[in-house]
Length: 246
Image (cartoon, rainbow, N blue to C red):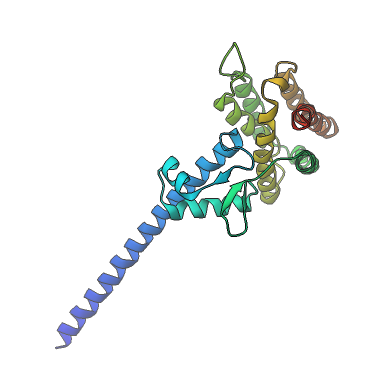
């Protein structure tokens, strides 16, 4: 009788273990689908495929991204926290609008935070970090800004290398929270930078601006590096403001 009881107990534990494993797998799949939906929707908002103020219908998004309803809702909630999406009372979601006022606030905050971050990074400089900065700048310089020689077409590879360069510049600041905030502001800024498109780049030597910042970092000239970085952002902001005011 005791043997039967022990066997029953073991069987129950087995079922519970199997159930827990199944639940863990399901949760993992759900998180994976949510992450995929989040990344795709965020990319389309940043690139302008989903335009500012556009209504985001769950059913349409579900079909477009081939993801279930729950992951889409969860992704939209995350994007709301990141200020890429707005919740419209009880009527659903829409892409967050853009405005000159918001861009000015974004620019100021980004300059404040990244100036501190690059100063701290230079203060904490190591040979390994300096090598990473040089390598990031070199790789960026080898990638064309546009996918077309005839007219401007944003190059996704350049965008990735550009973000990596700017993140590397401040990666030695010693604050994971500061890096997180700067990363979020960078992504928000890309939305606005897309508005300037071809207008902001042929008239500028962006590669030279990057190299000048890199040189100041290697010289451990924190004042010059911060000045050049802020100037780099302000140069782009002039074109973005012009487009927003039209």
